Image 1 (tube, rainbow, N blue to C red):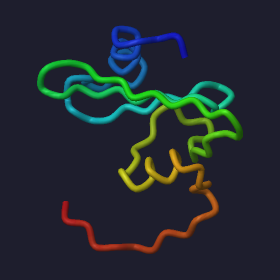
Image 2: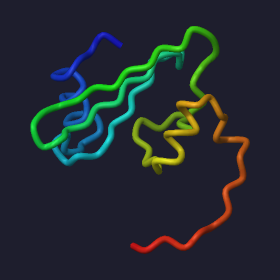
Image 3: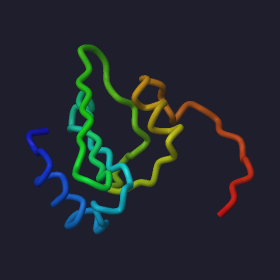
Image 4: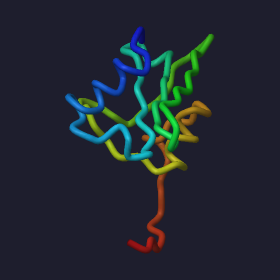
Length: 96
């Protein structure tokens, strides 16, 4: 987790094949799942939000995938330490 603004935005472009200027949140976890960085662009520049756990791990339902879409609720659960794999989510109406 040594990468900062330029390194993370380059990862978004090359590995994720997304536009880092889109305003989306891009979440990165280290291999041990003890550190998390969130990169986003807000009209005037890049922002990074970072969190390092003193105990435990983040429980993300990523598996082997490099890229996964998350709802804001899923991100909140991961940051709070709730294992999203053990939660049953019921279908809700979502306007597309």
